[in-house]
Amino acid sequence: MELTDIYNARSIKNAARLKLARWFNEVEKLGVDNFYTVIDTFKTHYDTILNFFVNRATNANAESFNAKVKTFRAQFRGVTDIPFFLYRLMKLCA
Image (cartoon, rainbow, N blue to C red; front, side, top):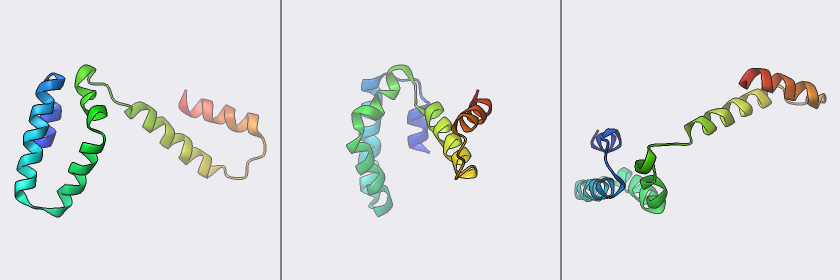
């Protein structure tokens, strides 16, 4: 819940960096192994994650579109009429 609060708060990048560092310290004190994976992921992508706090933009729309395309492609596996496939994809996602 604390991590969610950090993301929901309207803060600047440096303030978010400080809040995340404090959260890391609190989680490390708990000693729960499952959270170490989360912390390692955050540390690996720290700069990219902190960029969210600059203009609060994510790539959720692109990820959603990719999921729709993958689902649609799985339904029409083996289609040989590529122009028709692209037409149906355009109608689905447009």
